[in-house]
Image 1 (cartoon, helix red, strand yellow):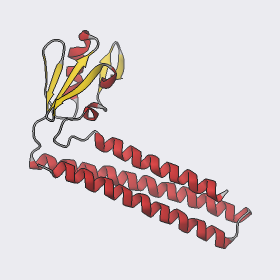
Image 2: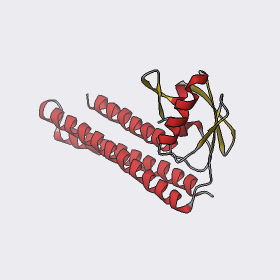
Image 3: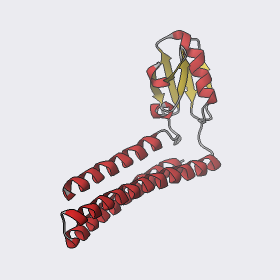
Length: 184
């Protein structure tokens, strides 16, 4: 039973790391990547639809994103959604495709992105600690019914080691992203 609790906690912590990586992939780090547009929702026939479901997104070079909508009538609504987003990019369209030029980041914008990166990292750490708390609570409940106090302490120590490992992984992911953002 305690093994199942630890396995569940480990899976949930891995999902927290995955969510952090997904969040960080949507941050602009000076080079064009289709993941930048993952959060953008477009009003399409009355429904909010992710832009990557409405258009093919390519990166012809490291500073340009090229969107080729499958439905040419959606070009203007995609353009409006990009303008409204917090990306700070200005789209230019030729009637059938949309080009997004990614300007180099200013030092001020880089520091803002690093702060945002740290915020995402802190949220991931909090999620991991909450998972640890839930797992420890489950172990303590078992201690009352089926396992000894020593076993309970050993399992809680294992959970703490797992938590430390995942928090270190969060730090590693954050430092890599910060390095990528600060790279000129």
